[in-house]
Amino acid sequence: MIVDYFTNIKQIVARSNIPAKLIYINVGVFILIRLIIVFCTLFQIGDAGFLRYLQMSSSWHLLLYRPWTAVTYMFLHVDFLHILLNMLWLYWFGRIFLLYFNARQFGGLYIVGGIFGAFFFIIAYNLFPYFTNVVGPGFLMGASASVMAIVFAVSFYRKNHEINLLFIGRIKLIYLALCAFIIDLLSVVSANAGGHIAHIGGALFGILFAVQYQKGKDLTVSVNHLIDRLVNWKKRRPPKMKVTYRKTESDAAYNMRKRKEMDTLDEILDKLKHSGYQSLSSEEKRMLFDASKK
Image 1 (cartoon, rainbow, N blue to C red):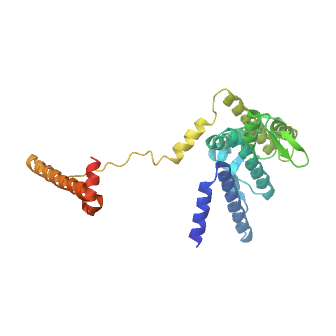
Image 2 (cartoon, helix red, strand yellow):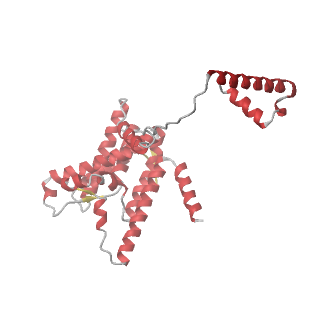
């Protein structure tokens, strides 16, 4: 029964579009992380320090030792409200994005936009004196930078696209995106400075993607090729050479065998002509089928 349950989940995920798949991944990681935290808390097994190995650090030194965090951080959420807002934005703008772009571009932009936001975060933390005075490195997590890349890509690609907002009415995407950008810009010295800086980085890459795409260049091609290689690396491995040995056949024996096969085939064709296909036996049908493929 449990196996059937997980099989059904697997089928649902397989049939879903790319925004839904990314939402499932984020929610699944969120649930797993929360369960680990609950377990560690109940049994007093340390704290949530393991998250440091998944979060993006503002320290170049830590990043060199944990390069994977430039990707893992964008699937990592701990607070329910944080993941709820990110997934709602991902769902709403994902549907709009797919009106103008394809699923591969969506997935590629999610990854590259998140990475761009992460490096924007680490550069800002090491460039501005305000952040260099902060005790200890900052840590980044959440899909916000990736989501902002998608929001700004479609907003700048189709500036006149309108949506309905509750209590506001119809509004163009570009105005909504610019409002979010201003909020992030005014919040770069807040308690969640790193998150807002990453948002700006993701947004800037989304704008860059839209501008370059209008010029005929897709900035997600390279990362999608890399993802394809990572996913299909086993399929591209050359198959192991299989050596078989078989006994050689003399010319006389070969000619006799082929003549016998032809005589048998002629008999089957005569039977087919006079009595129809249904009169053939299973073996005769097989032989006729094999002969048709040669």
